[in-house]
Image (cartoon, rainbow, N blue to C red; front, top):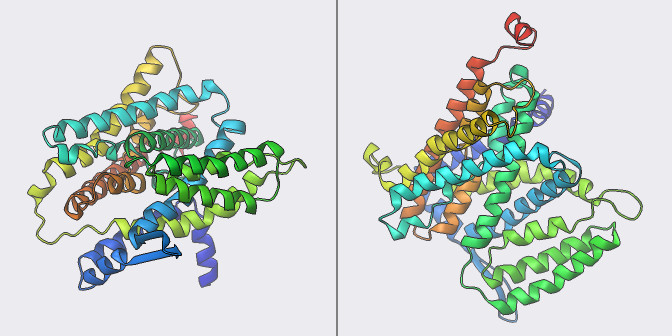
Length: 395
């Protein structure tokens, strides 16, 4: 009975988003319980991989954020390459509307955050925190509605979120690079060259590619460029088709997805969502940093995504997907404000001060929760179950 229930849960589209929510809730409870010192000490514990005194020595939280998240971005890279070569991003015409909506959904939240933090150089560096959308969470909320929403709306949200992630990758590469060490960056070109050669050769075995990608990750991490970029670069070097016509990319994506969705992302959420609520009052939510993040996600995403989509359609440059109305677009714009994983990740790159990171968590969790509730409510009120009179009339 239990196994059947677990199988049903993990087979549901919303299961990944639910696990993320539970992991964040667990972090929130632990961070505000007697276990809080143990939680902080564990995440701050140093873990070393050294050879003759050289190598990597980092606290556990950075192994999660630099290491496990590189695997997450590796999967994002695999999805991006597949979509660009044979999926939703293959035809430019299908990308224009969600692509422009993604741009609007990144620019407006960043501007709102900057407006609230303009006078504070210490916090302004986090301008990109509300610009990101969490794919797993947003699609998980949409999946809870089942066939109450058009299938084309899910495709639109998925395309927008993928392009949003691509924009986040570019932002991280350009604006969140530490002091650059050119010698390590040049050394990273050697395993990259090997990966490119294996890709052009149509290699079938993925183990050598993963090994080269790991070596590149090490060099990129030591160079000061954020190591998640190595995950994306490695993914783009995995052949879509090998010399026998099989797909190493499909096989690797299929094998990796459950581990990322049900293990890596919940671990990241548990390690990064532990906002300490002790001593926090409502007025703390109105401070520039948490308010800029929360309003960027809630208001900025709505305005950016909806306004650009409206302008593109009304100007005749694009048209809405089949079966999608403006109410659906509004609900989707709200769901795009679920930043969570990506927002927390960019926050960890922006601030080393634990007090500022606590403010980031406060803004991200409140903004994402409000966006999720607004998006679900808007689409739930708008939609009708398939087969009902209202749905039949709509068709």
